[in-house]
Image (spheres, rainbow, N blue to C red):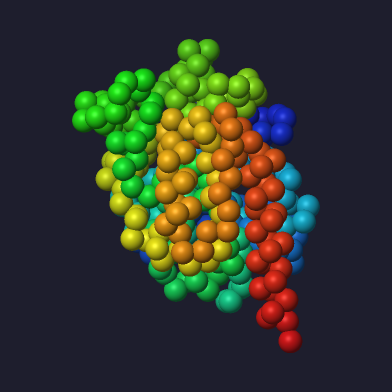
Length: 308
């Protein structure tokens, strides 16, 4: 791909991984995985969202790698993970447990954080025994479990069947996004970020999103349009924190509130005033702080309990 897949300088440029590997999923899909930080440090696993890549977590990786082992992977078809034939929530769950198995020792636990489709990945995997073996706690950022298209507010019109139909067509478009231009930045900012987002944050998101292959973007849009993980939310029994932006047009704050009410072990709902959908980039300190708090409260305790 000729265009840049991420910015190359500043806090939103992805740091070099200490180690890279490939995790093989159940259907043979090969997933690019990066490991940052000390192998002996508490582990954090990061799952990015639709049209993004490991580069989306640059700020969290930089902040956490000094004290944590940070594991980030590219969802199938995104970043450096090749496209696959299967696109489904089952595949997302397969991929996550494959990454957990490839990077964590048997019985070793991690805090698992997911943004948008990454959060849906966590929900989809919640009932898996492999997830129960490795997840000490979870963080769901800017995500939802169902009715994504119906509740999206990307189009400034009244809710109803017409808005749902048009929103689905826009999000599922096969049209290539093209180069990152001033107009493209303005559109992306309106649709996915809060009005106060700084130019460098918009640029970072635009570079990543525009690099996603058109076919991959379309295939996953169809999965998200029919998403129904409400039953899986009830199976997410680990301590789980939820973060949402009050200006999120893609997954409005009603989704975060709904998840917090439905989770069997919700340990906190953080509503970020004025933030849009791209919370790890828009509010990096808040997302990093939430991950730190989960490791301090649940991962360290879990590891101490395992010590004879």
